[in-house]
Length: 273
Image 1: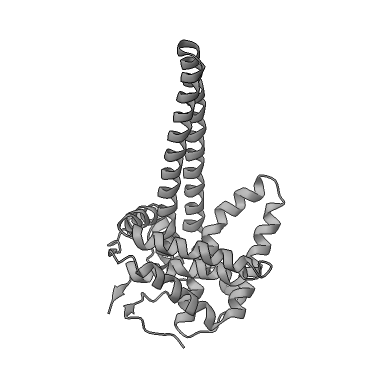
Image 2: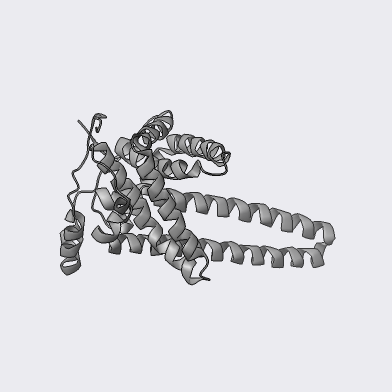
């Protein structure tokens, strides 16, 4: 049975989200609404997000394992297709993320999960989530292009310094450029990751646009970077443990990772009763 965690979950009826976006396509102003407010929580809540997600997955482990296996098979099949497969994977990943989130919400309501729950978002809100996948892919591409451009510029500057001041100065300039590039790339990657973290869940459960989802997710993650750091470390360590039994533990670790976003959303965005 579902459990009451002291939060008021917004009921998400079947095709309700799809209907909202259908109205928005005809009149975009119909989608304008009050955006969900986020709260700042303590660092220890990151651990609670993980524990709560683990409890949700433990209720129906076979169903979660089956969904994860099918998810991995789809990604594996796409990975053998050069270029196109990677592009499709990037676009549909938010749809699968939303599927896991909706499955978690369904499980918390005391309902039995089915394999088809993995594809719920494909039937309800494919457009906004596909757009989110395209936007994230675009941001990552911009980040890569920026990093490459900075690297080339650093190499050219290092070469110029080398000719003017000698080999030692060239090495120093090049080394400093590499370090600076690495730091900038890391910061950019973290910010993109923060913008994506809650976005699929916000789009799915709060019925907002992809751009609003990215902005709200980034703001919420910046406000809650400590619990986000804690849960990231916990997920990293637990992933290593899941790899030990021939990697079979990933069949349950992957849904726990997805559901952790749901439990985090519930803590940061859901209305308290």
